[in-house]
Image (cartoon, rainbow, N blue to C red; front, side, top):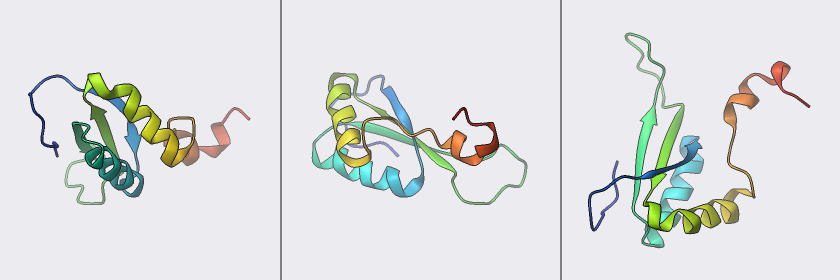
Length: 93
């Protein structure tokens, strides 16, 4: 999915989000007029028809800092790291 962008160009990766969090973020980016690119990521297994695990979100580089602030307002001051939540026994605590 690509938002309406005034110019086609490169996007700067922001983070990967679970679908619910991505929906909140993308709505906020859209209402703020920040161009974004969202790419769903699924396991690379033949025949996999399951749900999207994460959505990689990239933003217009000119609005990267504003997009980071939107993320902070929605989710706190750190970017999500969902991989660590799946493998709790391997976390450095």
